Image: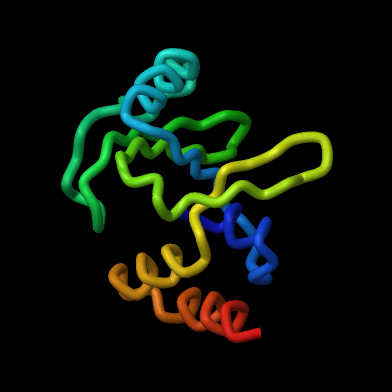
Length: 115
């Protein structure tokens, strides 16, 4: 979930941070790799709109959030030319933004979905 995903999929938002979506194991592996940049260690939480394993990092003033969740049915692969990026579907993002009460971004996503 996040602005980078929306930007990649053409929603027309500017990303303020980078959200990395992975599975539980991947979250902890990324957490170890980014340990020196850690601002919040990877750990299990139910504070978000869905239970997950998450951590936060800061690299050169760029906020990075790592999110490990088990549900990969809402993942699509975006071809960026020389590499591919797994991203959450816009439908899934829309539902998440509605649940979070972030209606402005939800409207932008809905507009893209309807186009």
